[in-house]
Image (cartoon, rainbow, N blue to C red):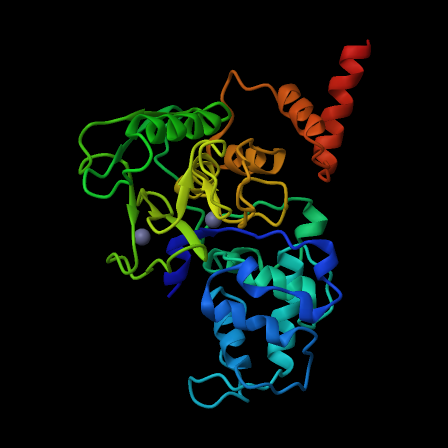
Amino acid sequence: MFQFFSYTTFSLYLTLLPHLFPAKTTLIASDLSPNATWNNFVNFIDAGNGANFSGMSEVKKYFHKFGYLQISESDVGDIFTDLFDDSFESAVVNYQRCLGLTVTGKLDAGTVTQIMSPRCGVSDAMITNLTDLLHVAKNYAYFYGEPRWGRSAHMTLTYAFSGDHMIDYINSSDVRDAFHRSFSRWSAVIPVNFTEADDYSSSDIKIGFYSGDHGDTVPFDGVLGVLAHAFSPENGRLHLDEAETWAVDFRSSKSKVAIDLESVATHEIGHILGLAHSSVKGAIMYPSLSPRTKKVDLKIDDVEGVQALYGSNPNFQYSSMIESNISSGWIIINPLNWLTYLVIVSGVLL
Ligand SMILES: [Zn+2]
Ligand SMILES: [Zn+2]
């Protein structure tokens, strides 16, 4: 019933240069995403309710695929029409809220840019209902049923890399080191250890690079677009799109579409643990990432989310988290965090 909640995908967000916003004609689609279908969405900038453009159905398919739009009465059978109708407007509004965009209900330039940016949508369904989100001041989300690994207070999960599905242009040791660091960030905040195992088939977490249709009903789509996906607990599969230009060091990877492996790994491990996407742009669990960008530090939203599932690592100190969040410029929006911060500061001052 909630089949699409069983996995998530990770995609990247391509930063739009500010000067590109106002002028439709200067928006260079190929610079935003090489995904051919999504490139065409640039033609729908400024479309709003009542608009009827050939090809709009593809945008609807996108929203449907990513959990924002159901087939409406004005659509014919199970085929979307090209009409920008009320249900699509609602979907656009939800999308804009979930992605932290200005809510206009139209396909404005900023929205189209985000839509064209390669990204995952399935797990966004977890954050489309934001009714109480602002009131409870939390932005992380879980998969349907809030699955997690085991129930013991302390646990060790094993992980292994597929022998048949690795990339050859990055040293295996560099790939493993990147994942080791990614796992360590999560284990630093929860009482869960991760250990690399030799036996892939019996490991809890199975990591590999795959291309196109690779047998799990969620085919990858080539360069950019969807970058990776991971399954919710206790499945353990973590798949990366082999077609991406993966990088562990941008100094040696000059491609403008290079994707930081460690950043994606850290995000996907969050899914492996049971976190869905966050609506906090700075959070690791936000569903998109700019190319040639390294984003590996957990934010308070990530930590709160995963600790609500597993509890806190006894050695974890919130003060270091708050300091790192402040130093990185992340804005604390959770009143509880402010309270914690004030208590800590007061303690220091006293
Ligand atoms: Zn994701
Ligand atoms: Zn897969």
